[in-house]
Length: 411
Ligand SMILES: Cc1cc2nc3c(=O)[nH]c(=O)nc-3n(C[C@H](O)[C@H](O)[C@H](O)COP(=O)(O)OP(=O)(O)OC[C@H]3O[C@@H](n4cnc5c(N)ncnc54)[C@H](O)[C@@H]3O)c2cc1C
Image (tube, rainbow, N blue to C red):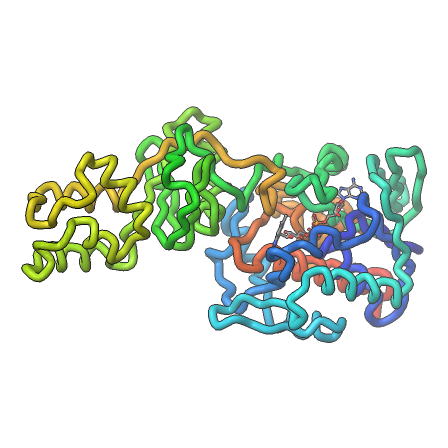
């Protein structure tokens, strides 16, 4: 009997390889794209951030009940690296734990994995959109494509069809209603790991990139905060600090709550240093601007001097301590009203998908339908920037592949 894998992304490919690790099991991989691994080939700005050595609870988020995620156990990055090496993809880690292929090429990773699929005789049905999933009374799966072809029966079906993020690379979540029709609960996807759009962006800050502390508020209640790199843009903000908060923006906006981002430009104890030099007699005769230039890019300082309505050449001694205090406050709590996030076209992942309640965490098997498995971004789990989404795709793909192999060839 045969196995069908719906989706030729990181999760679908790795599961097909694991499935055929010990002995060949007739496997058919279906994908919309001309070749599997299309999104994988562009990850990490073309470099492919494949996993991360730091793995902890806070690296992953889910709409499903929070305790469920820990039941899946976090990916073991060394296990992922070992496996990738065995497939011909040695990796290197940066000092802060981000793991990349030794080739520094995500496109090479995708092409090596495709060569492995070929070596293991995995059949690839490309440029084919699967639109229907059904289960026969005997438990076998049938699937059909948009052009009316029918495939099956299959003893096992793995759905690894990802989310809606990056439709320009073939991302598509139109299979969700079919999954729900099988009785499996799934959350609608919203864009995540993307830019945050302000009601009124400050275009004069646009282009500045710096390390900040960014906090998200809904009706004055703080929902979460991030410390990291942030880029001011014409629409609002982007960069890891904004992207890691973006999945939390949708709910308060939909509930008509006042949703704000507070940006502290003086994190890293910069305000302590500014206080020290402002009160230091050696700095009193210097331009007030030079004090702020010590910790912030000049373009930002100039923008704030304009907001504060003070000339750029004013000496520090002419500024009252109370005004200096107010200036520090405005730099450490720069507030913007949020309108939403960028769309799926600019989102690295989709937040939502198959509820984790539905899944056995060690095998990725549906708790309701024998022979049905899920892996990767179709599951309701996303990771932070830093290789966590591919970690999740590889981990769940490997688990599903091994579990299906055990099902097909019991010991
Ligand atoms: C620009 C960008 C950069 C990224 N960089 C990183 C990074 O450096 N590190 C990291 O960890 N994560 C990164 N991510 C996220 C990561 O790429 C994804 O989380 C991961 O690839 C998900 O793998 P997947 O196999 O679950 O889904 P996908 O890779 O999306 O694969 C699913 C496949 O299923 C196909 N499909 C869907 N529906 C159907 C259907 N009905 N019929 C047939 N085929 C279908 C799709 O066309 C797709 O090929 C990045 C994402 C983007 C968009």
